[in-house]
Length: 306
Ligand code: A3P
Image 1 (cartoon, rainbow, N blue to C red):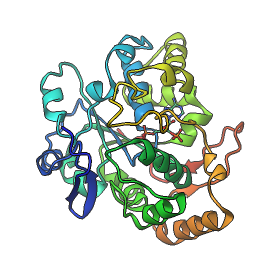
Image 2 (spheres, helix red, strand yellow):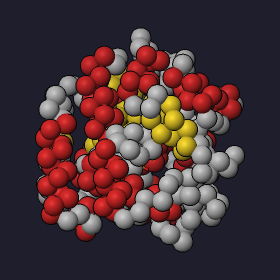
Image 3 (tube, rainbow, N blue to C red):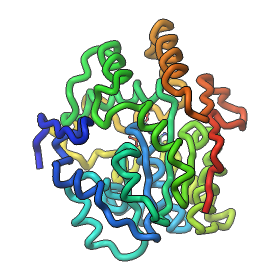
Image 4 (cartoon, protein in one colour):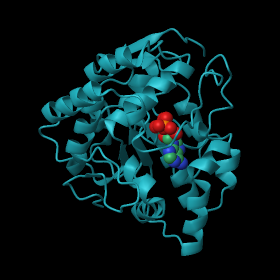
């Protein structure tokens, strides 16, 4: 499938036609979840691939064999992408499913389901910078222009997968209606990877010994994943992802937005955050005290209610 220049618009949201079709998007919204499914839900660039790796390693009790031999899109396919049904057909064992769909499109399919849903959120300033760089290398996304152009589109929600505000607001406010829901942030994972892996292992009811935890943590560190061809996207041909224009595993840092944003842009985003997240119980802290243990964002709903 090429369709690199095609945009699929579905329920007023743009998706890259390279991997998405009307049929694949319809398939996703009507998907029959099984209670044993684990669903990773993110807005793009929020730590999706990282969570795919963490879950693989938790289920493997720290053993990296699967993580190092199966591409992430095979072991945790994107529900809305056209190949998902085929991958799931061949799957034995509990399924790990990934999605970037906004809540309003997937919540009906999840209703009454006991599938385990993990939502990862990331500071929108870092998301916007990461997404901008990803647009430069991913030939299935439009040319982003300057960062300033891109940020304008991003803040309006006029980018693929829609508005960050709608995505985070939608999923976090719906958390209480989902039977098994874990909310975690990219920042928390950066600050305390050991604790985050442990949190995921508890949520999946897959307890690990301390040695297994340490092994899992080692293999999902930024440096390990950067070298792992099964997750660093270097398997994707150059005409689809131009590896000369950037790396998928780019910086892996909290607060990198400061190297790109002007003060004015930062203020604009703060103002938009204040006005658009009024109903949200999320509390974002933009600054990242790298060595402190407190979470950068908190949510009032219980983080996991099984
Ligand atoms: P940056 O572009 O800021 O470096 P997604 O998988 O949702 O597309 O998110 C990609 C972002 O997650 C990239 O951010 C990538 O570097 C970062 N990332 C992936 N694995 C990571 C890890 N083990 N540690 C820290 N960041 C990671």
